[in-house]
Amino acid sequence: MREVYAERGFEMGGLVLARNFGVVTWGSILAMLIVNVVTAVPLPPPDVAEYCNSEERCCMPRPYVGQPAHQFYPDPELPIRIRRPVHLLTDAEVARLERAYQLQKDLPDSDPRSFTNQAKLHCLYCDSGIYYPDNPWPLEIHNGWFFFPWHRMFLYFHERILAKLLDDDTFALPFWNWDNQTPEEPYANVLPISYAKSGSPLWNQQRNKCAEPPLIIDLNTIGGCTAKSPSVLRTENDRIMYTQVVSGAMSPQLFYGMPYRYGDAGGHGPGTFEDNPHGTVHLWVGNPDSESGMFDDMGNFGRAARDPIFYAHHSNVDRIWTVWNTLPGEQRKAPVDPDFLDARFTFFDENGDLIIVNVSQTLDNELLRFRYEQMPTGWVTNGQLPGEENSVPLCYRGNPTKTRKLIADTPYFKPSMVLHTVPLTFKVQRPRRRPEVGVEVLELSGLSLIPALQAHWEAFLFLPNGNNKTTVSCPEFIGTFNYVAHVGQALFNRERRWRVALGPKIMALGKENYTDVVITLAQFGPNIQPITFERAVVVFDTDGVE
Ligand code: C2O
Image 1 (cartoon, rainbow, N blue to C red):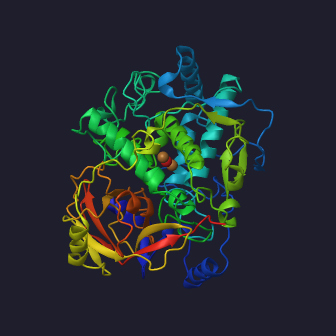
Image 2: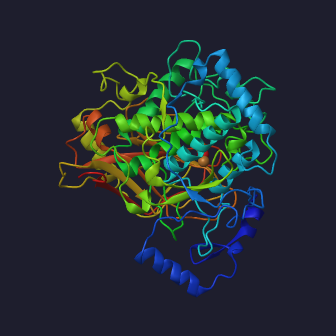
Image 3: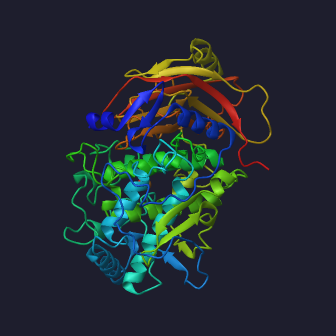
């Protein structure tokens, strides 16, 4: 694997350049940097055929025989489609779904709508297959603010293609309701039986054997099997959802991820939910013993959409985005930056024609005429009954004297601190003046890691003995970092940041009155490596405040 990466790019003073966009001159690099700093512009619609350079051979069929690319307009005549949870589909609905996928799998390779080509289109956008002519970096749809809108539209056209093949405009994609921990059959938080029947068009061979029903999903997995009991998994899954979607993601930047503009490398940091559990569900389904060593299919960016469960998984990701929009908090809204709203992406519609969508057209699912059936969302209240949110006992019981001593005994963060096999504990000063608006956020930046290896850590607040065995059920758990290497992108060691909201957790722990916070990071996963940090600050994020 490493050789492949090495052949693909070369490094120059911290900049990694892809070789394949022709001649790189220092002038062009300089021009790009200037463009980047002075006039950021939104991403123009990529010509997915012309700009294709895919190590994974994911280019779209050529020649293109459809209509010239045209702008998307939502069709007000389309019936409202209700996306339903897979585990509650009727037999007739499952049969229709199977028929749709069979028809799509039967399309010829020359048809951009075929199942294989749909998987390739995801691979192109998601695994470094598209290069704008004057930009050395591949287009990066993950690890940043385009994650939700791009996947929404990818799914939208996927659904429309299946509907067209069925000749049934009421067809709606189902969602895999893995965030629902209700302990009643049929279980929502296991791989749906209809996707697990070998030979079915919904089945896929490349999967984790521990992701077979009736085994419950582990939303904090690094892939493979778990020894956790069902009740522990249910509790932890609720806590992960609460921390990543509710308490940890109170602003546009926290939820959507870092900005990405034309000319820029992108991938500067995912929103909390993109990272986990979106990413961990991928890893849980992927086969840990796959030949590539990259958890094919679901756990590998380039291959994920070869598994039909990908679409039901992303339908749930999209649904949770709609739930997030309804959570309280004035900062729970989409970014308003024109470089976000005016960015454009190209897809293939149900007729196989190229179609261009602006991000601003993706933000309202009502306009796109689909909805989600309501399902229990116990995680919104941390898996507890309403009104009992703060009743989870702390894992590090203390009193003010003990907390003061802990703060006094903990060193302040220093640049170049390293997280390796031993958990790293440091303190960071909180801003002295607390504005009335905004959310208090911990930001770690100047992160360096070995880009070809996976990296994961858990972070805890005022839990100095936190380690990689500590349960995420502890109220002191504040979030996880998960980095999954892309094919071909591994050498793109971008400026990365990790941000997580502290405010709600500080309140829940009853620690509002201290001037410093004590943070512990514990690394876990198959590739424990030295991870260096240059900066740790606590700031107020006022993104989205009017
Ligand atoms: Cu483009 Cu869940 O991935």
